Image (cartoon, rainbow, N blue to C red; front, side):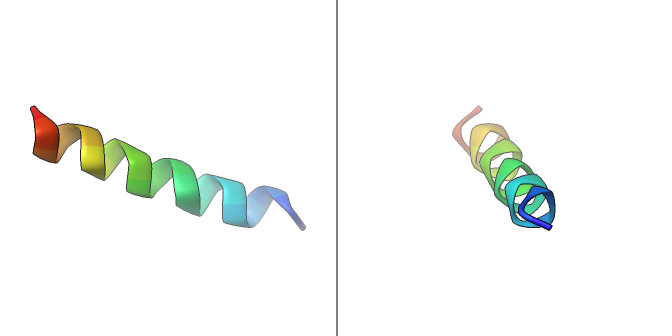
Length: 21
């Protein structure tokens, strides 16, 4: 499922955004 990796990437992006904040 290609959706699984996409969700993982989204999670990492969210973590990055929080760090930037």
